[in-house]
Amino acid sequence: MRILATNDDGVGAAGLWESVRVLRELGEVMVVAPSGDHSGAGAGILWHQRMAYRQIRPRRKGCEDVPTYIVYNTPAAAVTIGVEWLAKGKVDLVVSGINDGSNVGRDSLLSGTVGAAAAAAMMGIPSIAMSQARRTRPARFGPSRMVLPEIARLAVENSSLRGLILSVNAPYCRPDEIRGAVRVQPADMHVFRRTTFDGEEPAANGLTNVKAGYRPMDWNDKEGTDIWALSRRYVTVELLRPELVREPESGAGRPLIERLNETILGRESPPA
Image 1 (cartoon, one colour):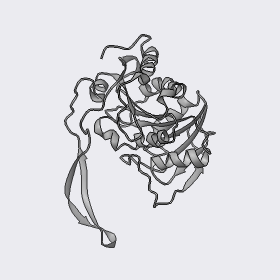
Image 2 (tube, helix red, strand yellow):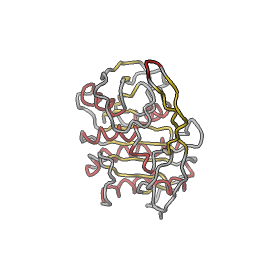
Image 3 (cartoon, one colour):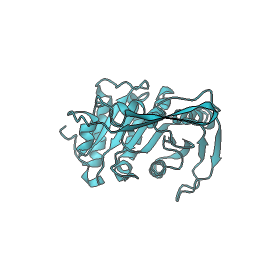
């Protein structure tokens, strides 16, 4: 299996290398990731900006021989360059993450983690956006490490998942505390995107900086949504089309959920 690993937190992010260590057990891994943090970049590509890359030798224990490239553009651009130019199209799976923080609700539409996976799905390549819920930085990636191998195998084996994004969130807990895996729908809300403006200030070259930030919104944990399930220690799985529209309920996701629950619990799907 030939796997391209990327993220939106940048090539130096811990979660990226946690995924690489897991994925190396499944096949050949190439890392193609943005130079820095591109959280919130979505699936955009800066076509007017240079599409430059540089190969480096990673200084990560056990990963020194992994082919690694830094791309000076967005996560989606990293996937596009990685698949079409560096790998010459010979990629069986793209894994974006492990993201340091969950991607739930409407925030998934803004996520560079999900956007990178969308770029792969648009090329017909199985793709996973793997995110780890956290309460402090950095995240504890144990739950994601446990479920990612099985998700990766199924994404490649199950042809009905080709062209879809598997957006997976692992809960904040110990791996042995995970209650199971469920397919969910995104909560109809933003979690961290209520924008605040605190004035402006002059900048160089005649520009004006707007002092903008964001603050958390109240969580709407309606039953059956990603936020509801994640807060109850379930691994959440969303099947998204590349245009970031939820795939209608079908049999496509059932084998994935069943196999994940065998991995997590050794039993069939838990009650919602």
